[in-house]
Amino acid sequence: MDKVCAVFGGSRGIGRAVAQLLAHKGYRVAVLARNLDMAQAAAGELGGGHFAFSCDVAKERDVQNAFEEMGKNLGPVNFLVNAAGINRDSLLVRAKSEDMLSQLHTNLLGPMLTCKAAIKTMIQQQGGSIVNIGSIIGLKGNSGQSVYSASKGGLVGFSRALAKEVARKKIRVNVVAPGFVHTDMTKDLKEEHLKKNIPLGRFGEPIDVAHAVVFLLESPYVTGHVLVVDGGLQLVI
Ligand code: NAP
Image 1 (tube, rainbow, N blue to C red):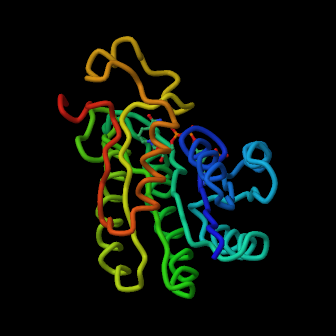
Image 2: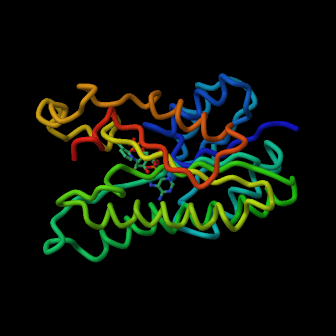
Image 3: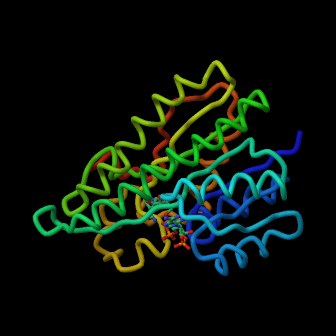
């Protein structure tokens, strides 16, 4: 059977590195993001046989359409990576409800919708593997990121419950929880200051996270696991 992987948020950052590593390993990859030009550029880097689709993970109709299109162009999806995510950092007292909702919709509702659609396909194929990208902030919390932390902590609870729910169908669900990684999301952070707290002394690169994602995608006896990829940051915060 072809290995077909949908990478939501595959146009930039961590998702893009995951898409590149998967294509290198022989998967057929669907790159999904809201910005179709960026998704097409990322899919174009992968060579032939890969596709890009525009999709807002927070919209169920978009997600359903994306799975229909992926089925037609690539075949049934049997691997799923949820790397789409946003942050709207703010102290809670100053946070706007629209920013709270957009984080919850993208980071938590989105993976729920993509997993729901993927599981229908995976059950038909008698198996599949899902990796959701959480965050060390969802496990440890951080001042100014309470809503983002809630969205990522919620994603862990969701993933572990779903892992129990679908294990009998031979579908695995795991989480990778990165620390600070060089992407657009972290470009405005004070890196020199922050990296002093990281035992390995540097921010991660997207490929560092991609290796962990692919490890979990392909580990046949691991489900409901949260793999922290943070250069040791969790040891000190
Ligand atoms: P990034 O470089 O900003 O990329 C985000 C990706 O998500 C883009 O492809 C973006 O494309 C897509 N996206 C955003 N909202 C979307 C939506 N509503 N529907 C579909 N796609 C959407 O971010 P990143 O740093 O790679 O982050 C990837 C994941 O890792 C996120 O879940 C993030 O929370 C998590 N994470 C990142 C770090 C870090 O240090 N970078 C640390 C811990 C966890 P469009 O904008 O075109 O939609």
